[in-house]
Amino acid sequence: MSAVGVPVGLDPTPATRALRSLAAVLGSSRPLSWVNTAFPFGAAYLLVGGGLDVAFWVGVLFFLVPYNVAMYGINDVFDHESDLRNPRKGGAEGVVLDRADHRTTLWAAALTSAPFLAGLLLLGGPTSALVLAVSVGAVVAYSAPGLRFKEQPFLDSITSSTHFVSPAVLGLVLAADRGATVAWDGAVTAYLVAFFLWGMGSHAFGAVQDVRADREGGLASVGTVLGARATVWFALHCYLAAAVALVMLPGRDSWSALLVLPYVLNLVPHLAVTDAACETANAGWRRFLVLNFVTGFVVTQWMLVTALV
Image 1 (cartoon, rainbow, N blue to C red):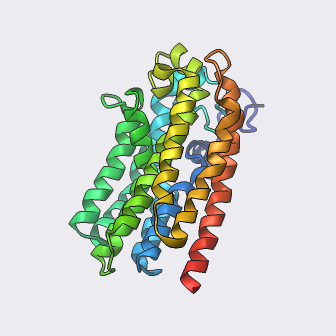
Image 2 (image 1 turned 90 degrees about the vertical axis):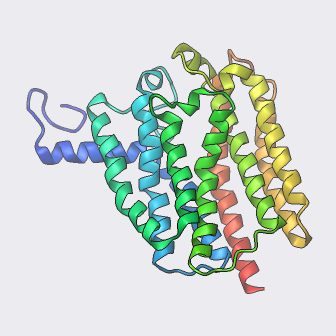
């Protein structure tokens, strides 16, 4: 029997092939991480006075699925060779796409994104269009041949952080384009700066576990340049800088700095990791994935309490 349950020697039916390709595309999009891009957009849009209108739902749905199909799918297509050498690929942390699914994945990224991009452009204005262009541009530039920002050390972390912060920025400016009053004060800036620093640190820590696989695959990254141990320390300093940005906020908002503490503690067991043992950082990365759900829950409750008080 084949992997899809078809007897060896018999061609699968078109329906079976389609289902297998759909499963491959969805698996490539990292479903466990969908909320990490949809939540920042939705939260930002609502916090500044946007409602549960059509723009909210178009944006949330775009950043929930098509955005991730594009971001991770493009990456998996053009990282195929290095993914074959990476022992952690093949599950929640990323699939190894069959070559037969590469074209399908790229088409899926383009076709699922197009109607949502058109909708967001029609619903917004010039400012939100510019932010949207930066957001989508960062997704393409990170992995696409000829650009490959992911192979430019430090630019890789900056671009990866843009993937997650830009949806929040779009939520703010789209709400403003549609009539909401957005106070671009120090608090908004501090939150965005902290979020961006957190994103850079998180990307860098994620690169630690792949140092050997990336080097063997001929890929450069912040991890391959700094080495495993120094990269963990770089991530730690990014997290601490994010906490400083938050603790400077006035009043009760300064308590949001505590949200960074679990991420700092998560790095402690890996501060002395060596290049030879870089794969052991995967344990910390798995904890990081769980932390994101816990943090998201806490932030949601904080938003609800703030709205009611």
